Image (cartoon, rainbow, N blue to C red; front, side, top):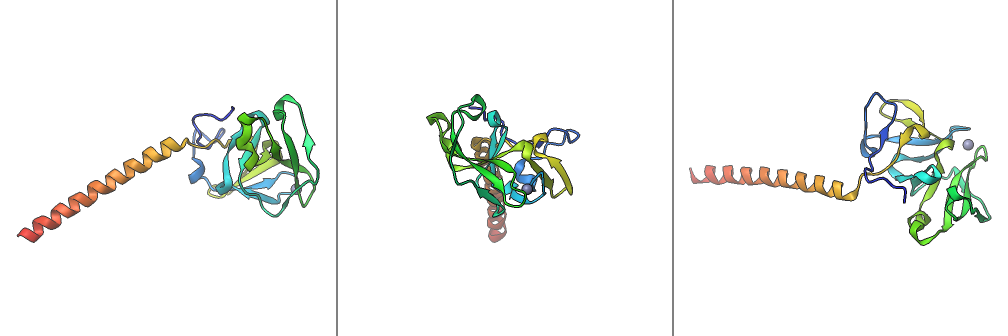
Length: 172
Ligand SMILES: [Zn+2]
C-alpha cells in the first residue's frame, strides 16, 4: 500500500509552510476549463501509485462513463474502473474503481482524481496551484485521537480548578 504513515496535507513549495488539510480549505478544479469538481473537505487521502487524490464526493460537474474499463497495467494495479469526466470540457479527470485486488479494496468506495488533471484554489491564500505540487495524505487517526485526549484532559483540569474555586468561595 502506498499510503504514508504521516498523513498530513502540506504544500511542497510554500516556503516551508505546512498547513494540514483541516486548516487548508481549497476547491478542486478541472485544469482544462476551471470547473469546480470537488473540495478539500471531501478529500480522504492520496493514492500515490496512481498519482491520484482520493475523494469521497465530487460535484455534479463530474460524470461517470457508461462502460467499465479494464487496465492491467502496473500503475493501475489491475483494477476495473469507470472513467470520471469533466461535464464541461469532457476531459478525463480520473476514475471510480469497481473491482480491485483485496489489498486495494479501500479504493472501491472513493473517487480517484488524477493529480495532473486538477488545480487547487487555496481559499486562505487566494491562490491557484497544481494538485501535483501538493500532498493530500491524511493524518493517522491515532494522532487525531491523541490530540483530542490532550484537549479533553486540559478542559477537565480547567473544570476541576473552577470547581475548586467555587467550593472555596462557598465555604467563606
Ligand atoms: Zn473541464
